[in-house]
Length: 161
Image 1: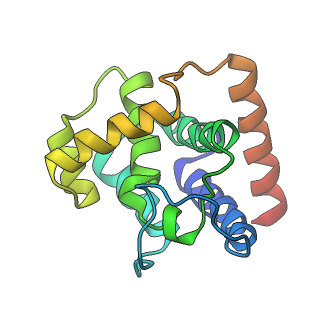
Image 2: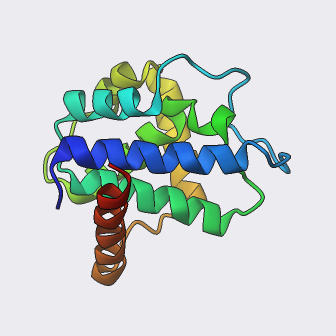
């Protein structure tokens, strides 16, 4: 696994590239994960904020990326664009939060994650359930799938940074 800062930068760059492509598409369906306006904080800054305050294993960030891909595969009518991905507390936070709860032995209560993401406890509980529904509660990631993502992240980091 690459060092956490390089990993976070790499994941942020990948998400930013995806947004460049998806922002050009017309929305087929707006979800509860879409915002009306794009916040001023960058994807990289937000991911680093999550890393700082959750102190989770770097594997959780890879899991989070895989979960975002799974949501896209399972719900092709929901386009992850700037209005969605930039509502960070609803997309990035949930993908990583669910990964932390699934992978790490120790994790915080939802009250803490709500503070990190700037949400109320009621919102975070409701939206966590919606995110899990989108994943069909399928959180297990095959070792081979994880290794493919890990290798691609290493290749991307080597090429791009």
